[in-house]
Structure formats: C-alpha cells, structure tokens
Image 1 (spheres, helix red, strand yellow):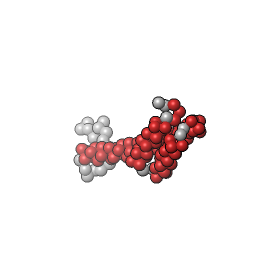
Image 2 (image 1 turned 120 degrees about the vertical axis):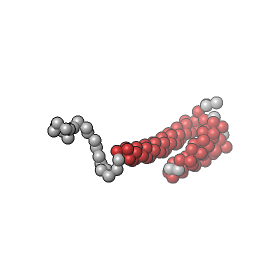
Image 3 (image 1 turned 90 degrees about the horizontal axis):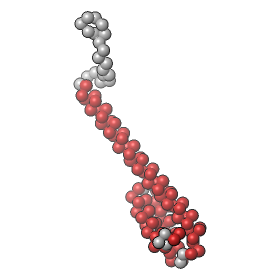
Image 4 (image 1 turned 180 degrees about the vertical axis):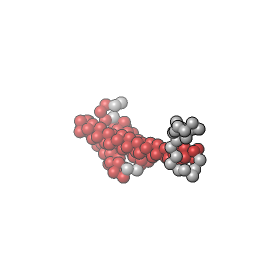
Length: 117
C-alpha cells in the first residue's frame, strides 16, 4: 500500500517469500539454462538421426540405380558400410553414427556410385 491508501503499482512475483528477489531470478535462470541445454542436446540427436536415415535412404536408392555399374569390391564395401550405419542408427549412439556416416560417405566416394567423381 502506498502512504495515501491506494494499492501500489509495484508488481512483484514472489514465489519464494523467504528468498531475496535476486535468488529467485538466479534460480529461474539456472532452470532455463538447463532446459535450453537439454533442448539443444535433443535437437542435435534428432538432427544426427535424420541425417543418418537420409544417408541410408540415398545410398540404397543409388545402389538400386547404379549397382550394376559398380565392381563387386566397391559394392560389397558400400553394403558393409551401409549395414554398419543401419546398426548405429538403431542403437542411436551419436558417436557411432558420426563415424559410420563418414565411413559410408568414403565408401560411396571410392565406389563412385552415381558418378560422383
């Protein structure tokens, strides 16, 4: 209340009446930062899984189109890398997915699938 008897315009949300205002703000800030970090981690995982899924689809499509133009050695290397990528995708281990995606891309480039070279 103001001295003149009217309610004050001072709007304060005091969810923790025993804590000073700065502690409430700091606690909320920490909670927000934690939530942002979790969201970022989840987003990165989803993006990596989507990239792996896309690479599997593209490789299978190109193998169907251009598989007869590859040597058996190149085709088996690509298929082996493709199977490893599928297993990594199922396990959802981001490090493994990253490594097998690089392996898959290398196998495809070495096999010159789809005339990439």
